[in-house]
Image 1 (tube, rainbow, N blue to C red):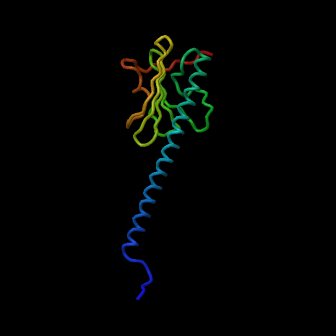
Image 2 (cartoon, rainbow, N blue to C red; image 1 turned 45 degrees about the horizontal axis):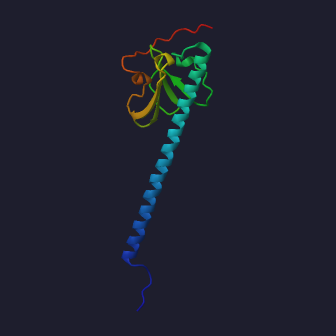
Image 3 (cartoon, rainbow, N blue to C red; image 1 turned 60 degrees about the horizontal axis):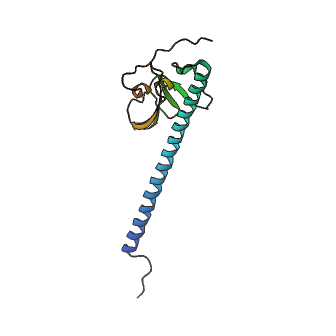
Length: 154
């Protein structure tokens, strides 16, 4: 006698294979989303850094007040406080002229970059770490305090 249909073992094998495919697709999708957020954060850092370089060429110093920056990139904003999303960059200039930038990448991840003045050796440092308070001031070199914003002299 011939039975039509599938055995329990065949059904279990199919369900296991389908679940593996779903897990693989979900992991790939999360990775894809994460790389998009990383790219937005990197683009924001570059936009604010370029604006700071333009400002320095024009006025001879980095802008201590983020509101003075001529940012030409879409939704990117600069703030003196903490960064809360990938399009908001925390900007601080230290007393010795060091520029520090920080941007929230995702969750607790904070990406940062510091640029020292030529007089101080012109060092560039960058990194990423878990940081609940993504502020550029925490990435200034040891002992360097944030500079008070000075009014622009046109």
